[in-house]
Image 1 (cartoon, rainbow, N blue to C red):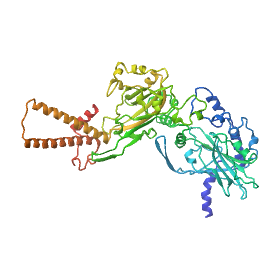
Image 2: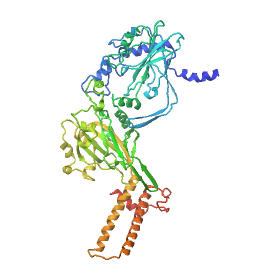
Image 3: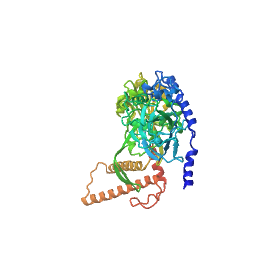
Image 4: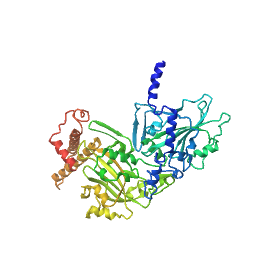
Length: 575
């Protein structure tokens, strides 16, 4: 049994990055004093003190901006001194047990499998860990802990100035005053979550611990002074935290910062599937573009397949290259976005409730096109900020009306891209309209010349537009489109038959007996049923194999794609 326990513990010891307490403490001292180690270091001042800076990249709580080293930020002093940690003698071992799970963020469902190494140990030289892996309270212990000693454990997110955990009477009878929260780092830069240990005085009770603060940010010096802990800080460790969609969504839901578009930027660069990716400055993106299509409730059978859909709104899932059924893209989507202020040094204050923050000095252009064929499906300009936030983009000037983006070839799929541009304040709608030639005054509904050969790179450059957001979707000629085409062809045939019958009768009245009239109606109804069935057979033969079409609703015979099917495909392609 002892050997088994040794085998279980051995891998954990072997992966320890800092096995010796004295060496670990020395590394902590160096880390805490480094003025350029973390994102809030001296380099932040160099990049973000200018007027035109990226608000999300330069996010920094206003009262913490003067402090650049981890030590100065913790103790709120511009010049950090080693004396602040003179009593440091404990290196707390902070261990996270990684668990699998799933979550939804930025309109995408993420699934996290259990990794090979389920144990993560905090260390000054560790690889940054994703927030989702640290969502549960870690195990905190150290080798020299005495049975009679009690401690206060404090966890502080030094980057964002928040108190993430507070407990006292540790470890014998631990009482939690602030339950654990992980560091919700929303940017791809390392952020420090600091674990601090205070030794309690055995002759004092700590049931009246004060955690009051004059602001929403946690002040460690104030906490130490109010609770007479100035000389009791004996242990410190740092968890290095990276970012992931989990933390980005958490901050988004709290209406602090929406950085989902950073994931779009990463995916665009990684996939590099469209030419505009290389030419566009993707770092210009400043918002997430929400696009939702309404799915109506339907129930029908076609091509031996029963279709039942509930009424709901379907959001685009660009991070998963999500596919939308052709049925929902027949009508215009609901489009919204909220642009955060870019030139405000105190980003935290200005975006307390970013959902209501709208810039009224800018207008926007929305484009929907297919990059592969350079075909334009929708173009609206002069969209006011308020309308964009309220999902009423129709308040803008529609230059090219919405055309349902559905392939014309059975089983073919295509990728459609929405791009939101910020217009310069001097831009007029006429400058965009002139780009499409003299026909713009009558608008573009249906197929028109303005839709072809759309060059989005030239369009952006010509009108001095700034990239604000990008999203995309995948649509296919699917079973829903097959049914729609059957209905269209059946209707066209009915109209054609009616016209043919009328031309044969001419203008002369024809007397027909009641019985003959009823017989003719029965024959006509049967003929129409056979014609409709024939149309369905041929359309379905383009969608499925003969084996898949063996059902009661359609003839058991196989439907080879012969001359009729070929003609039908050509007809659909040129519709």
